[in-house]
Image 1 (spheres, helix red, strand yellow):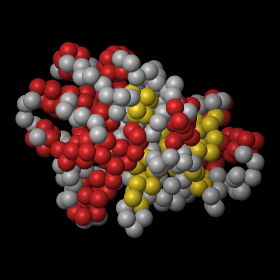
Image 2 (cartoon, one colour):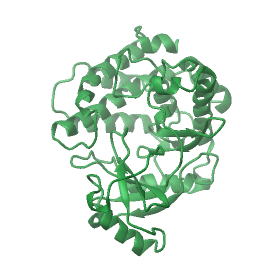
Image 3 (cartoon, rainbow, N blue to C red):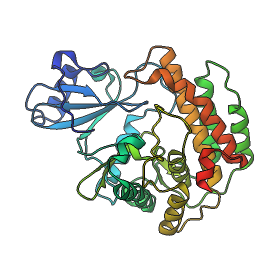
Image 4 (cartoon, rainbow, N blue to C red):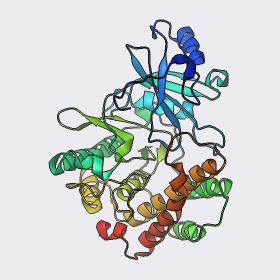
Amino acid sequence: MTSAPASEPASAGPRGLDLEGLRGHLDRVRPGLVAGALRGRLIEGGRSNLTYEITDGTGRWVVRRPPLGHVLATAHDMKREHRVIRALHGTAVPVPEPVLLCEDDSVLGAPFYVMEYVDGVPYRSADQLAELGPERTRRAVLGLVDTLVDLHAVDPAAVGLGDFGRPEGFLDRQLRRWGKQLDSSRGRELAGIDELHAALGRSLPRSPAPAVVHGDFRLDNVLIGGPDDTIRAVLDWEMSTLGDPLTDLGLLVMYSSDLGLTDSPVSTTSGAPGHPAPAELIERYAARSGRDTGAIAWYTAFAWFKLAVILEGIHYRYTLGQTVGAGFDRIGDLVPVFIEHGLATLGGRHTSANRQEG
């Protein structure tokens, strides 16, 4: 959702986006919203749900829909994603204003929703973040932690999300869910991934009070802008639920760790000058939220496992020719790296990731 203009003609919309069908639906459901022919472009960077910018030459919006082809069970739920954005709009958590939800597959071939376009930058790499300089980088990343605290402070019942998930037994269900998703995308042998799954199951921590969980909270899932480099919007709510808030923190710690790779298609920003170390992020979250973060190693190891499964699912779709965009050819090589980091974090072995956490 950066500010590059959409330029494709309505007759040649990007794959997965039928601009003529979309325009007809918008005219029926929101008459007067669109004033001219729609043009659209795929917003690169996502590896799961597809995100498009559309414009009529005056207004701009964003369309979200599931990926093409192979779709994992319980994932890519547009109704659920739209619901949480609608609930959080108007709280301290910055989210785009939702425009509409469409569950009719005949329009785009899958359910989708439309939301407002928000100006801002999703910082996806250390090089990109380094352009801000150390002081602004530090402020932006610490702001990410503060936004996470704000999210976890939302009273789910007060915003209509009291039934958004089942907090009881959340971690056990998460482990089983990601194990099943791994099985549904198995197309090759992956050394260590079953070992990591089993080890996590043997050492489940006790969860704190439940909260609205984002499920994929990281720097390139927010838009940063304005003179103070504030977070303008939190994006990509497809994995959100009601559950253990420390799963979000563990994921943020993982994404703030060094993969030990160069030119990786998975975004990590830890190498940018001024980027706070994972330990500082944990301390800031604990101080501002009041939660005990003593078991963060488990949550971080779970994040490594979860991302390994997600990446394997994307790699599987790539092998079937069902991905849209660039960079998918290298995803499969990353999966063993994530498995190793997960085993190392859970077992206390030293890698570039848990050296920073210590």
